[in-house]
Image (cartoon, rainbow, N blue to C red):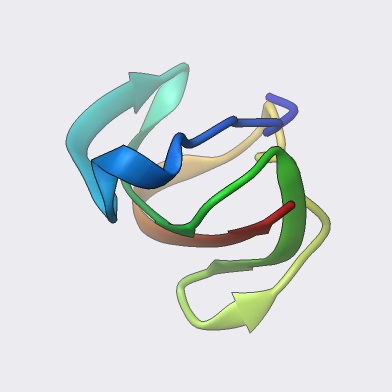
Length: 67
């Protein structure tokens, strides 16, 4: 799953919990504003903004956005 969110500045930080993706469950937190991914971590490890299709189990995703 490719990650390319856009977050309006009026929203503040956004968190989504228990997002099902194939055989995985994701807790996703978006911080910052804009439509460009500055950084993306999964379970504390820096990755490109994508979740592998083969992912299984429960994972925490943190995405920092910038304009």
